[in-house]
Length: 243
Image 1 (cartoon, one colour):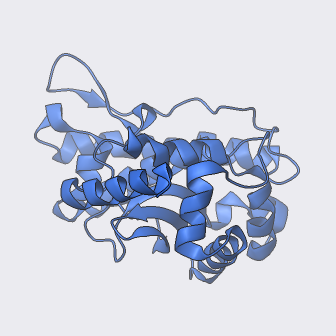
Image 2 (image 1 turned 45 degrees about the vertical axis):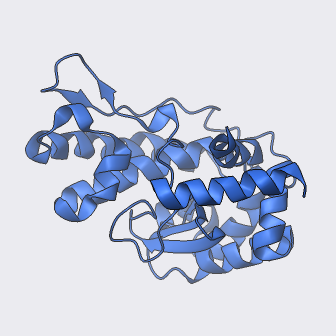
């Protein structure tokens, strides 16, 4: 049996026992904490490229407004919600907040989700994208969907058919890779999610993510977005479970 299949079985078994993504949350999604457990502050990380670098697929004006206004607002309001609601400051990570989100207010749900989702979104895009994934990620996609083209079709359909605002996701679960979508700023790490799993890739289909360039043509935005997916980051999120 090829080694990657052994590794993948181990990944699926381990995540089923331990809970999806317990060791897979990258450092840029963690809370920034001081030594005093009574204070906590989440930070918006710098973009790994300039506002214009994703053109022509995402225009500079959209990137700047999206990052400096919408995403920054989620981070600011998340920190407000933490001060209002969160008691055990020393344990405040995005993961444990999202996994218990039903215990918190709508303000916490919307803004914790918004912060996590956008921090992931920026990292999984790049101006130097490869056309498609390789190695273990490619094998996992073929196992779960039959082919990369099938993944793209199912993911694009989920994004296009998400009514109103929300996200489409590629997730890792105990049963393999799956595609799902969530409304508003919800995500598959939340305990209220219909389909739970660890997000490998997410696409923002709120109108503010594309309306300046594409107006009401969500499908065109989705099709063009595939040209800037950072498959290296997606692969690292999956491969980190094998170590």
